[in-house]
Every structure is written in C-alpha cells, then in structure tokens.
Image (cartoon, rainbow, N blue to C red; front, top):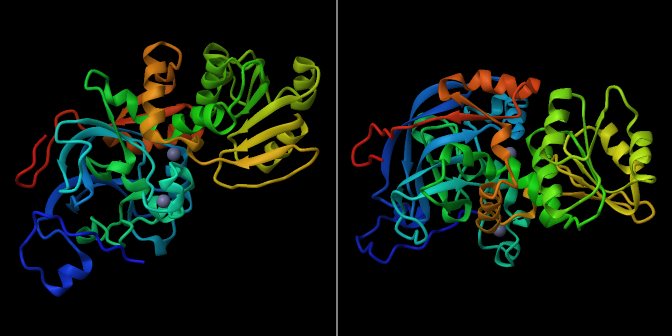
Length: 397
Ligand SMILES: [Zn+2]
Ligand SMILES: [Zn+2]
C-alpha cells in the first residue's frame, strides 16, 4: 500500500536503503506550528505547539489564515475514540503558500489558496476527472496520514492530514490536488468555507442533480450546506424553492437568500404544506439533516422520477416509481473548476455566502464549535493568523 514517490531529478545525492524505500525527501524541514488538538471525546480542543515535517516532493506548505468549521469536524469530535489517538481536524482552510515541494508546479510561495478535499490523482476515477469518486477517497480524507502512510506530525505523537490538510492549525500540508489558487485581491478569511460545505451544497444542485430552470426543489435543513443549495437553486432558476428547518432565524435567512417558501418543521406538516405549495410534490429534495425520518419524508414529498440527494455520508438507492436516492460527496465538484465559479458568482452578488459566516479568534475554537452545534452560528470561521509566524528557521510568510 505504500506509494514510492519518484526521486526528484535534481536530487542526485546517494540515498541510503531506508531513504530509497520510503523515498523521503532528506531535505524535509521541521516546522514549529500551533494546532488545535483533539485528545478526548467531545473535546475540548487544545491549542498546542507541534513539530511538522515537510513539505514532501508533492506537497505545499500553507500558512492558514482562516478555517471554517464544518459538521464533519464536529462529528469526528463526538465519535472520537481512545484508539484514534490525538488528532488535528479542520478541512476548510484558506491561506498563503510558504513553501512548495520539488515537484509542485502550479503554485509558488506567496500564492493565495483555498483548500478542499483530497484525492489520489492516480486512480481511474481521478484520471477521468471525477475526484469525488476517487478509489482512495476514504483514506485520502479520513486516514489521518499521507497516502504513503507517513504522518508529518509524528514527532509530536499527533496525527494530521485530515482531508489532506488539518486546517485547525497555523500551518497545513496540502497537495496540488486539493488547493485552488485564488486572486490576492479577495479576502481569504471569507473564502475558507468554499472548500467543503458551500461547495457541497451548491455542487449538489448544480453538478450532481443538474437542477433545471423551473424544477421544484425542497431543501431539508438550512444550515451552511442547505443555504448554499438554496442560493444555487435560485441561480439555476428552480421554482419553487422550499426551505425546511426548525430554527425560525435560519428560515428567515433562507427566504432572503432565495427560498420562495419555508416550512417550520416543528409547526407545520411537511407533506401537506409541500402539496399546498406545488399542487403535487417536488422534483428534488436535498436532505442535509442526516435523520432517517427526514429521508422518509423526502421520499414522501417526491414526484415520480424525482431524486433525493443525501449529503450526510451514507449513500443509498431506494427506488419506487423511479424515485431515486443518491448519496452525494462534495457536490461532485472538481474544486479547481467549481470554487472559481462560486467566487465569480459571489463577486456578482449572486452567491452571498458571507451572510452565513461569523468570525472567531482561533483561541475561541471551542466556543465556535458550541455555536455551530447549537445552530446559533451557521458557519463559524476561525481567524488563525493575520501575520504569518513560523518559529522554525528558514520560513517566514
Ligand atoms: Zn466538511
Ligand atoms: Zn483517485
């Protein structure tokens, strides 16, 4: 399973047997970083000083300026087990490139980048341009190691590489496959959540379901992912666009961002309200809540030949009268194509996702997680470093 990285052409020094086997870059530096470490189920995360080794040939060392918090981070906190050992989470990073490995061509020091999910870049799916279907998607994103099995934080007894980044840290190692270069004129702090939650919600509507103009759609759960789906549904001209949630404040925001109708699931019956609005059912449901009951209700409000998109990690294929359930990962988005598109829509005022964001200092990460959990904040974004600092030698941003 270990991948042997090819030797860089410029590296003609004699290699020891161990080095040849691991193909480790013997020039790899050690950087002192700060990261929020999970050592206990449910947290709290503690900001600690760690040593990080890198970058490898294909890696990009990024000074993280900001990182969104996504419900997948929270899920990993809640299900953490002693056997997992200490972990660094975070997978919506944005920052500035401080160093690149020898084989990296697409970015250089000083470039601004948004980080997204990781893929292997070598399997059949990746080669066909479908990195969300990567055959090694699970290990690349949830393996807490590089795909060659190594871990840049091993000196500190901690594991990183979550989604190929672990962005709850002052610095992260990514690769060209999960970074998207963005204009230096844009505010990096606001761009960070594009890498997962917003890409997932918008990509589901625009790429996976390919919702057409005039199609009817209901979005169950109007958190960050659901609201990105609402904005995307408006962009493609869906009608009606029905937002469903139990928090009135979020439903109000859904109306402002493009929903034509909202249903408060605590007060109203979803099936009869949808029938009132559409005269029948809806063509699409985007289900973001992860509840089985809501999945059942989604099938109940679906028109024949309609589709339910499940965005909570499971995939299923319940069929009746041609109604489909589709498990969707990252909105089937190729980040390097889709994130620039979302940024263009944002600049045009058509994808105002900044309205979902509330900023927190890195030191307040546990409060930010608590607010995401309670629903008080839709998309917390941590401000991690304004001024770059690396305590190790040789690198400064
Ligand atoms: Zn996420
Ligand atoms: Zn792959």
